[in-house]
Amino acid sequence: MNTTNQIPAPTVTDWGFFGTMNEHAEAAWSLAMTAISEATCQPLESVRAFLDSRHGRHFADDVQNGLYQGQTLQDAINAATQRWMGWTIGRQTAKQYGIPKGLPYLTGFVIHCEIVEESLAA
Image 1 (tube, rainbow, N blue to C red):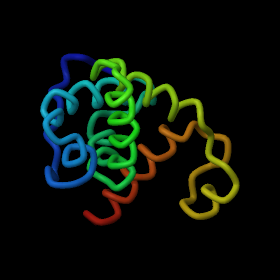
Image 2 (image 1 turned 135 degrees about the vertical axis):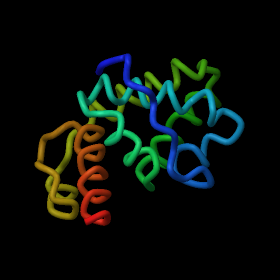
Image 3 (image 1 turned 30 degrees about the vertical axis):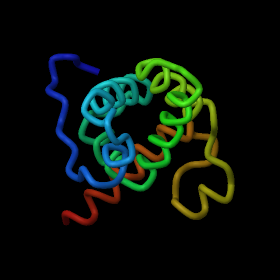
Image 4 (image 1 turned 90 degrees about the vertical axis):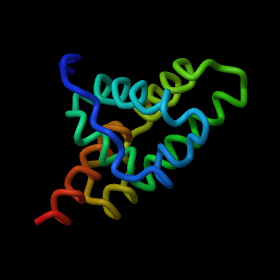
């Protein structure tokens, strides 16, 4: 990721990742955007589409679990990112979402959310 890129603001603040992060939302947003973009090699706009989606809400739940276990915000985001990158798209998810089987889960859903956002804008 090119760190000179400005972090895009969330398009929704009452749900998705931002809404789920509650009092941590402002601080967590840029940390998550950067961590996910670097892990998936996807542009910030694609990561924003993911974080604004219901999948972003589930990612936030994972980050919240880390916070509950006593991790710092940065560590909780990094742990969630690595966990989601360690999972792979299975047969059923590939069939349901059209994401190639075997792709890292986080990469697959970041790309999927970008495609969905582009199709809705068309």
